[in-house]
Image (cartoon, rainbow, N blue to C red; front, side, top):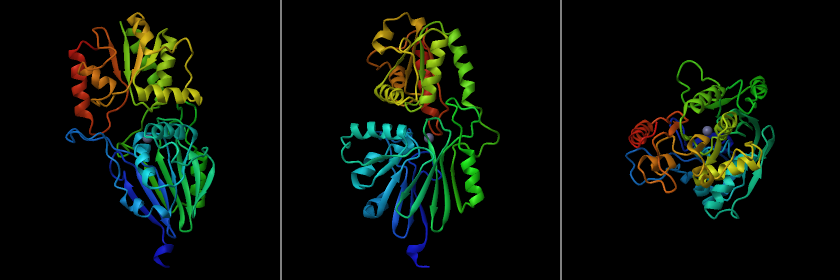
Length: 353
Ligand SMILES: [Zn+2]
């Protein structure tokens, strides 16, 4: 067997770390890239906005790249795509929502015309060079996430992407267990599984437990409710919208990335908010405090996010007021604990609860 006839699995980023996920599969001199994500900087990396994988190898071999497939629309999986596409002119395969989020990112970087985007639905199979890629739906904190069964001449590789085995997901679309069973029956040469906190014993509760938790907040909050989460957490947007409807509040999205993503998700049918519930920030700020819920970014204490700016009193359109109830609706990403604690302290000092 010559060197070229071997399968090479090359982690470009994301292996043993949280962020900048990128993997290359190489066979017979042809390359398939999976994901192109970013990593958020540590507190001591002053002046660094974000970190991308070192993909010099892919860059040097750009002509041999047959395609890039993206598992889902989180920043740690798509956040470096504009940098990759600037030097590697390969087609990008993604599910409809992931593609929509990539389009937003490319438009912001003036790359819309440079990229060749191809839509793939969960469950479809695409041929990319010597790789037969079967996509399958996985449940994750963003809709339209997929895992990959990659058939190579050297055997079947299962690349899960980020996933959760939630039996009662908010969007009623669980992981495709049947496909996993089928792979298993066929015989899997390599399984690459990606799951933060996988080393913790026990299990993660269903996202559904969040609904009643929100109701508790909505029932007891005397004034405005400000909920922070990731701009990509469409399922959480839906849960807040549902709680707003149940509790008779109007809802507004704050911040460019949140507003853009909500718009795309609504347009594509992944987010359903009644017209009379959703208002603009401008309108929300003129309503009585007790009738309003605002949704914004900053659950990780990022200084440039809306919550980060509220904490330091540098947000342009509005400020934290006594009577505001602020919810950081996400677990801290490992490493962000310090920034989050600082942000919470500052918000409390400014009168927030
Ligand atoms: Zn993810």
